[in-house]
Figure 1 (cartoon, rainbow, N blue to C red):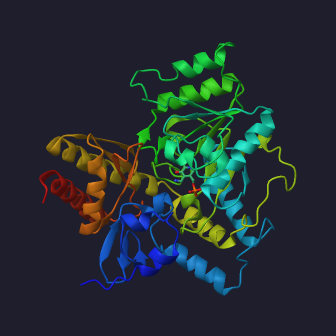
Figure 2 (figure 1 turned 60 degrees about the vertical axis):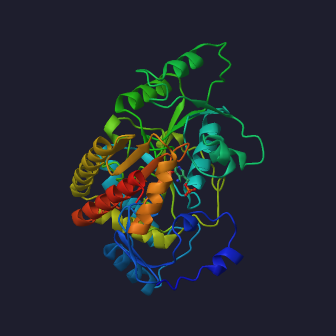
Figure 3 (figure 1 turned 60 degrees about the horizontal axis):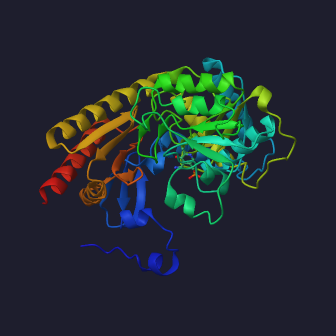
Length: 420
Ligand code: PMP
């Protein structure tokens, strides 16, 4: 018997609401990889706030740091004033993220969303190079504001802009044509003065396209892309909003390729606790901003700085999280491969702890996600036709929870295939 009351969402909340339609219940509490609705039904979370909850819901270590900070009347809102929370975060970023990786980045605090970070990165690239065009990739997703939409692939999302989206040009992502060297067109277009492609300020890329359907770029392709950019004085922006903070194993998703992007965007899990926060990392010489040139009221979410710092200290002082993520990822891969072999009509791809189950019949993905929800598992779909069930569990999920979630997913696939 359900007591769930949803009228107010239907009468007062805008039609733009989305996830609540996929998951028609009212959630009340959450801990780690589990959410509980107001009727006491539990759900296992293979969604993790679209990548904002890599360390799980209400992570006790981060919660302790946050509570202590709030009880001590630490600043909550601080614009870009210097605060003890921000100092601690910057020091820890330097010590645990930049120094061990030999990165000489400076840190910009834009507004707190991924799109805010992308806008700042595009703006900086144009300012530094004096050029206007940015190259993006097929199936890319970078956010909903105009600049971010201009480098996003999805036609329906782009249409929402209501104005022409300009000064960007899409290039084929790795695997788009299914041939060995998908950078052929890009290289040719850049080097042929009659190709009609203007010399770009920057290239913006996701190493794994999360929203685009869990498309995984090969390390070799990323290296070639980095070289191609460096040789031509084009800035390389890696959008690590969804794949950063350990989602693919290492802290940054580009580490496997051994490349150093000129600019990196981070958001989602960098705040640690699901609190809004974003960063733009830029090579030192690119920090050509003048004071206040790019600003915003909510650049100083100090509560997020506290949980971000606590997350870095707790999870990134050693390699344990990386090893655990890769091990869990292998289990997911093995389980999905077994599903594909057993049922057919699908394939799987992924890296670290982000995996996709790709359905030949796109409509089955949404059905599987729907049945999974009824069974108590939250998964979302992605890809241009929503043909991919995307698995994004918290990195801190326990082995038992991972097993349970994979079992529920297998049950959902079985149910959709056999109509029961
Ligand atoms: N970049 C990437 C790669 C993303 O996955 C997202 C969000 N899904 C964004 C940017 C936009 O982030 P936000 O929704 O916080 O604006």
